[in-house]
Length: 292
Image (cartoon, rainbow, N blue to C red; front, side):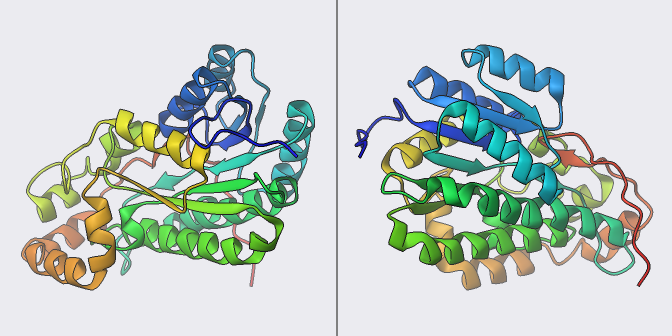
C-alpha cells in the first residue's frame, strides 16, 4: 500500500475536470509543480493542450461533462494513461443569470446538466478508481450552495445539489478508506466571476459589480492543494466563508433584507436581457428538448 505525505501531493495521480482555464488550469499547474501527475478533461482542446504542456505533457481529453457515455469513456482512458487514480477534482461548471419567473428554462436545464449531473457522472466514473485507502474526491462548490441571491437561482440550486452529492458519496465510500471534500468559494478572480455579475440586472440589485468583492485566486488554489494532500473534508476561500457557512439562516436573512430594494426593477431587466454564459469552459451546444 502506498503511503503519501500528508503535507504533499507529490506522487499522487489526480484527474481534474474543467481544466482548460480558471480554477482547473491553475490547480493543474500547481499540482504538477508539487510533484503530482495530473490528467485533464474539458471542452477547449487548444487551451487544454497548453495546460497539459505546462504539466509535463499530461494526458488530456475533450469531454462534455454532461454526457455520461463520454465521461465514462474519457475517465477510463485517462486513468489507464495515469496508471491508476488517487484523487478526482470535480471542477467543471457553468453559471448564468436567470429570473426564475419569466426566465428561459434552458438556462436552468443547462446549469443542472453541467453542475449537478456532470458532478454525478464524474463521481460515478471515478469512484471505483479512488476506492482505496489513499483515495479522495474533491468537489468544487460555492458559497452559493448556502446563501442564495436573486437571479442566481439556477447556480445556487446546482451548487446546493453538488454539495448534497458530496456529502452523500462521502458516506457511501467511507468503508473503502477513500475520503470526500467540498470546496466553498466566494467570488474569485476567474473568467466566471469577471463576467458573472456583468449585467444590468445584477447591478440594479447590488449597486455594484460584485457581491462581496473579488478575491485573488492564489489562496484558493493553495487551499485546494492542501485539501488534496491532507484529504480534507472542507476548504474555503476567502477565509470568511468559513464563518458564513455555519450561520446560513442568519446570512440568508441579511442578504434578503439588504438586497430587497432593487429586486423588482432587476427582474424586469433580467427578463429581456441576454447575459453571456459565464463559465470556466465554453458554452455547451444547444440540446433539443425531448418531447414529453
